[in-house]
Image (tube, rainbow, N blue to C red; front, side):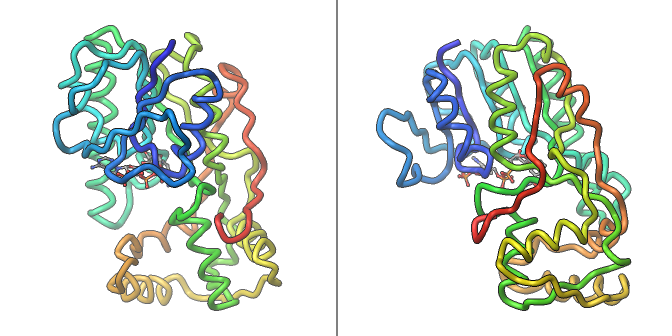
Length: 285
Ligand SMILES: NC(=O)c1ccc[n+]([C@@H]2O[C@H](COP(=O)([O-])OP(=O)(O)OC[C@H]3O[C@@H](n4cnc5c(N)ncnc54)[C@H](OP(=O)(O)O)[C@@H]3O)[C@@H](O)[C@H]2O)c1
């Protein structure tokens, strides 16, 4: 395998994936709407394109790794002739955890993702493309995520974190670099063809333990403010009106009381998936 197309090259995962593929001796065509990052190095083929528009003329890659929103994949796959022989695409465990969300926007998003998964599988099977789907849990690392990085920014600023129900629900955060490694591991692995994997991190821990470690990574002692779920939901609804916080939803408060944990056994078995325990870094994570 020689040439790999990476859509979502500037995502948290893409930031680790592009250099890893190049280190493995593969030629990468990186796609983003933005210019390459300053540390991209020379010799990388960077294509500025919007996945909502038809794909630009390009040499057809041998493989395609899609690390952008999944519903943007089928349009390009439909238009790409001939098809790449291999596709590896990211969906999300949210298709399960948000399926019964009280927020209709989230349920609609789940429906779009489910349809995109089905379309990918259908189109790929029709054209003889070997596909693999990843459904990661909460991704951190790589800078700027809306999960761990958001909590880190919060505790740096406010030094106290609101906690619902003692923070007992369990989480399984996965580092973006471990997902990038998983991509490289499955690329030429035929045991993963036509399969879907849930990819969590190497440790299951309570929400409170997760936030404890984020406090510690910021050099702070954890401090919590116990809050009733209904009150936090109102605060989140109001917060979502502020600039840059439109992604907040009261449904997040509802999820704070649920376990978000998945079986990574099949990934361990098929491609020796070995993600790290939860170790948030400093300001980036
Ligand atoms: N974050 C999570 O916790 C999480 C959890 C489970 C699954 N996932 C999935 O895992 C993958 C990586 O997640 P992420 O959070 O690192 O990335 P992300 O923020 O969802 O975005 C990934 C990339 O998608 C690209 N993108 C979005 N719209 C585009 C468009 N119209 N045309 C071209 N590119 C477009 C963006 O590239 P540019 O802005 O550079 O164009 C961005 O770098 C995604 O498929 C995501 O859905 C994420």
